[in-house]
Image 1 (cartoon, helix red, strand yellow):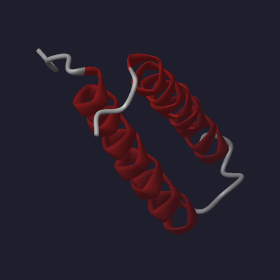
Image 2: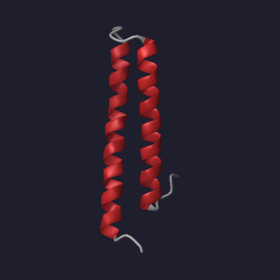
Image 3: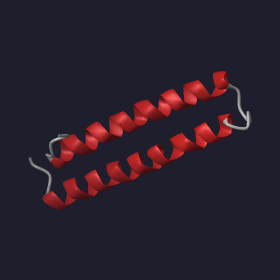
Image 4: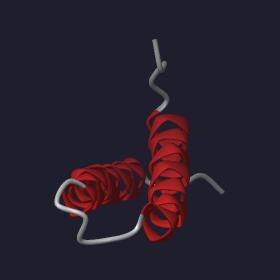
Length: 70
């Protein structure tokens, strides 16, 4: 059974929204490192997780929208 078009579009919109939120969070981690508010050893795992999450959400949005990444 195929999902209705509106359902797929809503799901893709949710993935894109979440991806933007993850993308906006990455600079915050960078700002924490500038005035030494957080150790590098504490920021790297968070940044790695944000990068992986953003990549996963991007792939999910592209897969479900049928769009080409290029």
